[in-house]
Length: 115
Length: 115
Image (tube, rainbow over all chains, first blue to last red):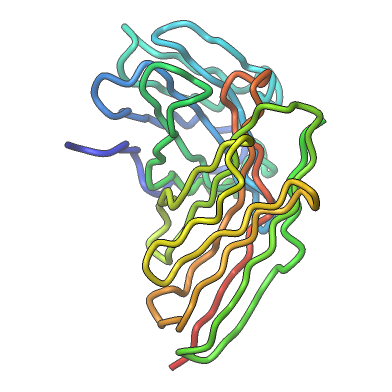
């Protein structure tokens, strides 16, 4: 069974540009999460989808970040316009049905560098 | 509020030494899960273990063991006879029942095992 995949693995953009990150969860997983790790700090929660619905977006830093989950399958996270402080590694995770009891499995992350 | 503290930022050991990674957590919830994830140099987060708040039994899996103590709010991870392949960043995380499944991570401990 394929794991969580993320694309691209790396992205280098200039301040003010737009970037879109994609996450494909494990097939059949209802829950999809985005997290971010800024250099040397802890991994922080951004938001949680249950199927196509946003369950919790309390961790989204500001309105420059927009997440979608089309048809409850893959998800995209768009940053527009990107700022220097958006640099970091963006992780996606998915879990089956029960958000609390089912383990989250992570993708390899997308390393975003904003110059 | 929930919080996870991994006080050891970096640890360096020589192969075959035993090493313990500390994790201290804070939560007011009585129902929660604790996790350990490993991030090898390749970047992905690999799930290692999950323990719920009602199960304080220690767990052993090969060279890995985990010591969960509610009295001290700790969930420590020990690697016995460490190997070079154990070199990675290790994250401890907490998921509380009322938080919808989102993980609260510690800052991570970077373990370097030298030959």
